Length: 138
Length: 138
DNA sequence: CGGCATCCCGGCCGATACTG
DNA sequence: CAGTATCGGCCGGGATGCCG
Image (cartoon, rainbow over all chains, first blue to last red; front, side, top):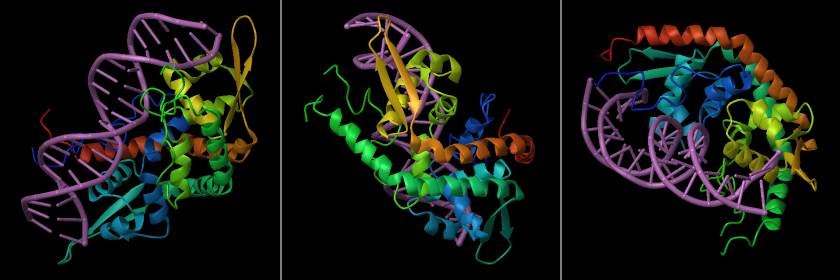
């Protein structure tokens, strides 16, 4: 069994069938793009189609393995397309589908919020850590 | 060492210090509320302050353990407040802070998108699974 | 009521090496 | 270039039980 499989190498980056996302739509979104890399990949693809290696360099820190798995997952859920060109040096392009058009704005809004709230959060965190320190011996 | 600690029971629901969220604000948001329960908790708290047991019942499926860990994490990052009332039966209320006011809308937008795109995604997934089936016995 | 401590497993994810 | 295969660590998170 060396061919492509549903669970590529024993996992699938997201739930294999979204079994119990149940009635909470927020959970569903997070199950789709709430993982470590998918959102960043979508953002990068938002600027236009990208090749595999382009994404690998753009996302910064992602491994080929996780890039592959994440892209497969996004493709499976209809969020990106994968196009193979029959060139001498292999060439594959990934692009977003119409499905994501409607989430780009909310995603941007979240990012904006992170930029604005970031400092406040850091402050709150340090305050919390200070007031709860000393419980643990160094 | 039976007191409260930074890593309560060996984990922290989110990164202990958000070390390498780096320059991607989206990653930071997901590091904060991208886990399995935090977003739902925030949504529930959006309707007003809630007690621990109220949340436990409202969130549906969450364990006391994860509720505690998630709330602690949200509290640490200044997204919710924890108020203890000195009553005979212990009473603790959780509420959102001003920090979250600005993400409620984007969060709602994401949920809306999930509701609308849900069917299309399911279709895409089944199509993908069909066209890639037969590689694995059974 | 509102937690915390312990056990434990499955899956995320990184590192590394091999392939068409 | 664009993947795939394999090993292994770490941690999210469920189940259970005890405590003030």
